[in-house]
Image (tube, rainbow, N blue to C red; front, side, top):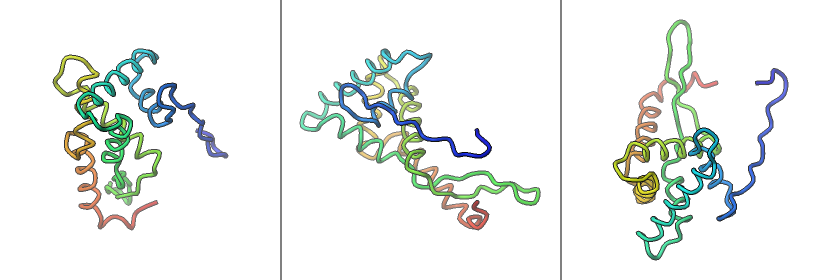
Length: 157
């Protein structure tokens, strides 16, 4: 991290199929060991399964709605004051919220039962877009934790 200047955000080129930066960011988060083509195939296969299951809806709309439903507004950060550590609630920036949502969706997809990752990811996306599933539960837990520690909000930095 630079000492003087703030590191500038790199502009991500949108993905080739849906022309969306959010999709590209999600695929980058899915990628393991630099295998982008594998991650893209799995993601696009998951969206095909979403398309089959929700006949009338556009799969990218379902994906966007799922990310929106999982994105947290508040989180807690540990802050040390006078020898004690407090969980201080802070607002989440939009870029960090989207990154957390992607991380939770991918992590919970990997934990789901299913044959292929595409099936598991499509199931998690459908659940999240309907407001259910493990990712939405994780967001709710994060909000509850922030609400419970509202008394320490004055330690915010």
